[in-house]
Image (cartoon, rainbow, N blue to C red; front, side, top):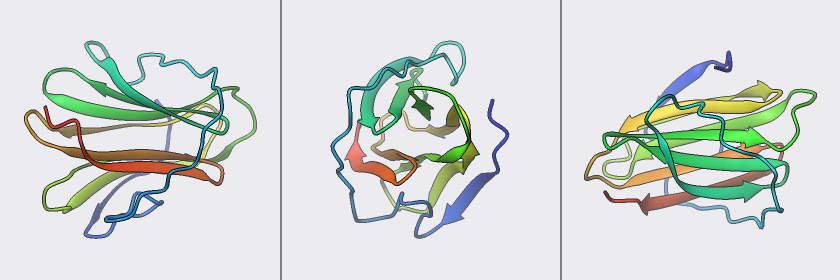
Length: 134
């Protein structure tokens, strides 16, 4: 697990995982792979490529988990993984910092509820709102 500071913010979220606006930046063909950073029992249900890596959304039947993984580990760069329940926009969980391999994992209990999720690598960020209403 990365040794980043876990931040739970109320109201407007930090690190580009902001309420009400989405950033859609074309990704690249990424070679990043999900390495079970979220733990046993989580399956990848969605991905989004960024320049330099991939954001993975996983689910285990109760909780969602997001991890942002670099294509090639190397010198530390700004990275983030963010996740929140769509309703109420009260809390967002973000793992943001300077990482060599991945940001996250971050979790939210979301069975039967919609989520907002996204991530950052360097200056490339992406997020989406009110999806995966399982």
